[in-house]
Image: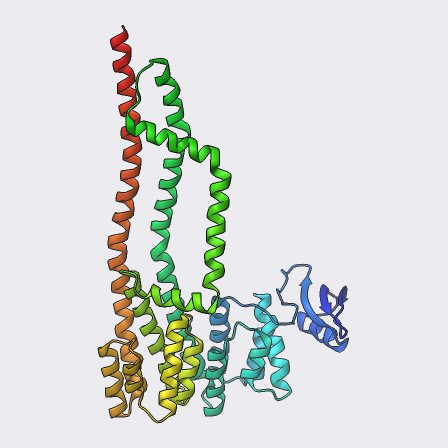
Length: 405
């Protein structure tokens, strides 16, 4: 019979470790539960550890959340009941994190706990927005359809994040490589040329003198420069985490040339996708707006959305609230207004999401078409400046030698 090494928290809060024998991981978890032990990790001889927090919940990546949703949706569509579907996931070989989440959720569902509540307690990776959509699926009896919509939504949001990250990889790499080349030139090659040129007793070119002095300064004071840079970064990050600093920075990001327009388009697309999915799944508009606000990371925009929710709660229309907020383009407001008049708000939001997805992609392409050549040009100018200084120094040294000969 397989043995499982475990780390668990006892009722009094004391952490304990030990080994138990069980036929399956589920059986091992049941034994720990019978001993009133909350598992932190459970490892079989041929498996990795399921990373469970000290409060008994498990962290899942976005990809794992999508995979879990796909499994549940497929099994429900195949005709299984929710508990049976969770049991299949629990016993399926693969990610121990998903097995642990399925086991914890199934245990609570079997005891009568709503699936959304079980997910909240099983893992913080299932956010409030996700759980609210699960609640809507349970209430309307279309859990499978709701899960498919949730999968589509998660994939869209994952694609948005991926596109933003990929857009920054190449410029960051070029800047890093160019910076390393410049530092090597200034700290290694130029001092050697200075020593060589000193033997000719000639006069260094002004540009070379400035570069060499800069290299000497960096070499002599690099610990202080590094500490100063670190202090500035830490101070900036500390200030940005304050309510006032975060509000100021999140607002100013939207005004950055090119990047601000891209961030706005991303917000419009996310807003439309999120609110549209909630309304389509039966969530009331006011509740959907509050959930959408919670899913927005920019606190400046979140404050605007909170005011919009208050306006809608007072009986106003969504399009009017969007207009009063002053952060949405007229086209978006008009599309929502048409949807309200025709009684098909979810469809209007879906069309708006598709439009701003395209606008965001177009903005990404424009930004990359400008940033990449600009970064290469700046790095080329820096490297060319140093190269010119080196060549000029060598020519001056050769000229001095000829004069002396």
